[in-house]
Length: 339
Image 1 (cartoon, rainbow, N blue to C red):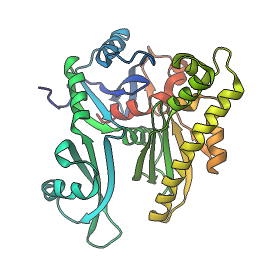
Image 2: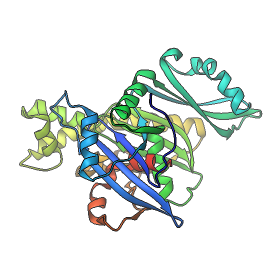
Image 3: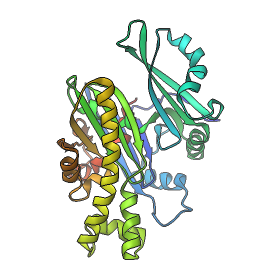
Image 4: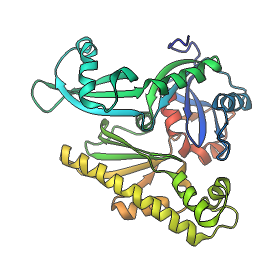
């Protein structure tokens, strides 16, 4: 049985188990600063469908001689649902008792098949109402995480959701945000996470099942190459056909942008605020031209941000090495910061 508890170690550890790579980050709070003490990224072989993620995690921890006892992890994908809802004001205990009944109204899953949680965000605009964040994850998905942790003799402290972990990392390294519409994108291999906030308050989140993998698929079809070779070509390595790579990238980004625009429009209509800034993280932003294309098509300035910039570094870590992969660490850093 895996127990969910707090780490006795000074380090707080975030473990982000993605579809393209696995990331681990450790941070420690001391003397008013937060220090990055360890990190590693392990690629998941694109062509090896039988790879065991627990074995990869063990390898990545061994590579940096880092063996935590407690970790924070996250869930994401189509088996995770997040809703922002308004409910009559009630206590946390009252809401906990009413949670199953309320969840049935707002999630497309059978409540017996999910793990539920909630956060009371504060007063709603309507008198006598409060804003509540309702989250549901398929029980099978959570149990898989628990099993991986158990096989590695790890205890899980927190199970978060990717977009909120990303947002948590951003808030750590930036001053309080102005009360305006701000969008955060994490462009991953199999999906794109969107979170929209008004200042520091999250208001909307969505996962688009489009990512870098879709560009690879198009390149595999167009050029009759392996997924690994497609990944190289996408990142400008080897001897790519730049015209075909550009066409595949634009085609996938156009589909992604349509979904982003729908999401932004929903937020703007519901909250009567326009989105003035967009911040991007994720491995896909390192592909040449992606940020510029998004900015042009969305008509909003899209900025890369470095999730490590607000952290001090342990003496044994190279700033140059960390910065080279920092865009991939937003979720794992956000998880580690959960304490």
